[in-house]
Length: 192
Image 1 (cartoon, rainbow, N blue to C red):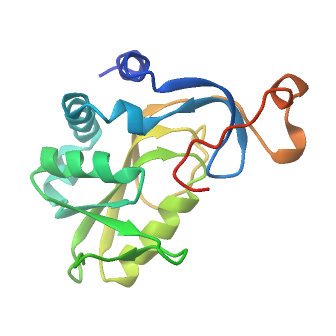
Image 2 (tube, one colour; image 1 turned 135 degrees about the vertical axis):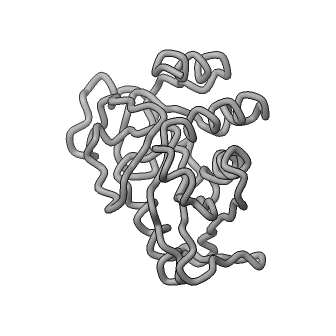
């Protein structure tokens, strides 16, 4: 899939939003990709996951033993990537603020893990999720994501394979342009 093909899927799902959004990173943006909407159709989710897997080098695909995703945003795409790879897909939760495995999920010591996210903006959630996997004994071999919003700035410490890179401008609280500041804010992500 080309970048335009991916964006066409977001547009078809009504998942490419415009307004004034507060991202989970705390930064502000005039654009938001609502991955939950693009993934609500199982056929579309599977198609995007297969395209993500095709972006991974073949030798890496063969090494992956399990997919792990942070809840909430990564659960659906992580599951579909696991299906495309033919491996189990687990997810992490943060009931008390820190990521942890629950529901009987665990990685085996030394198990090779592909971390899968919906959107990476700063990479903070990914790094926190990776810490939980490593603490449980897993070995993170790479991360894949539907969207890289970091403008290539996210340092995840492992090879990173986004399906598409989108460089919508983002702003810190003190540097929001007046035309964006005039629009009421919305916080559409899974973290409040």
